[in-house]
Length: 258
Image (tube, rainbow, N blue to C red; front, side, top):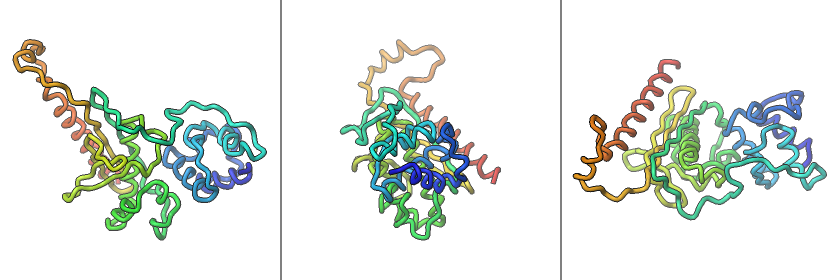
């Protein structure tokens, strides 16, 4: 891949004129965050058969060009910090001994509009056919796709070991009653997922369940309990309740701002 091809591709994704693509230009500023980088990744995979982690870790336009043009007359690739250099997720989902939370907010119009989302290069690289089919059955497919994107991002923030893994390995599924949950490599991820969309915004929260703790005898728990403090066994439930309240306030705010 050459520098001109990189320039044309970034301009099309960022909807920016070529004169803005200065070497020191912030890639996050050009692409507008992780979803823009995912769109660039999808385009590289579909059009050039290239999968390069520099799409997600490059800080500037110059660093992106350096990485993508390496081996084709460009500069040698540079070593950039990244959470994970492996495209594969762990064999077993890591579980922390404490509750972790991930939240993501995205504009619906960040999802590329397409005549057929089943054939769109971005959707095919980010969502499974089943996820796209679910979105197409909803009143606003684009809103549903944005909410599912937020769910995948929220999960990665709660479980950072999955940063860098293939997007299709993390699937947003729905129970018969419509309740969403995360599936990783065919297994339900332990935790609670909540997502919503209102107007131009989509939001998702994932609360990863902590590793189970051996039950403590009630007498011992009462002895070690700080006066006035809530029982240890109820703290996780209280955390969920607080997060649910915050989530509701976000949703209410979005409706007011519409």
